[in-house]
Length: 128
Image 1 (cartoon, rainbow, N blue to C red):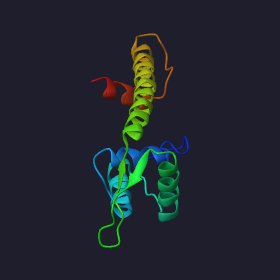
Image 2 (image 1 turned 90 degrees about the vertical axis):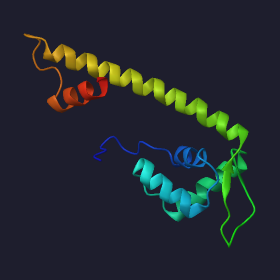
Image 3 (image 1 turned 90 degrees about the horizontal axis):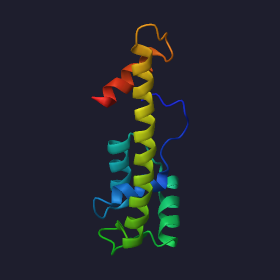
């Protein structure tokens, strides 16, 4: 995926979203994030995030299994994650709505090309 807007996904958000599906150990979190978001978290990034989230009480470790320590999201972590995801949804819906409106305006006869065709296609696709 081309992403020339910079880093779009905060590692903390990705880890918490992964753990929202159930407890996982570090490697399983990395695999889940890679498959769901297309983002590869390195071990240094992952365990730094885990440490910060644990300190804030948003995730907690469980008993180790075969040298692997699983983590789970806490009730407070679920509340914080849900609030952030709702804010993100509002921004996404607003942006997609504006793109769809711009695509419609650009498609009107005599309106002129106000947006790039790729943006118009994306907006119409998301609108359907």
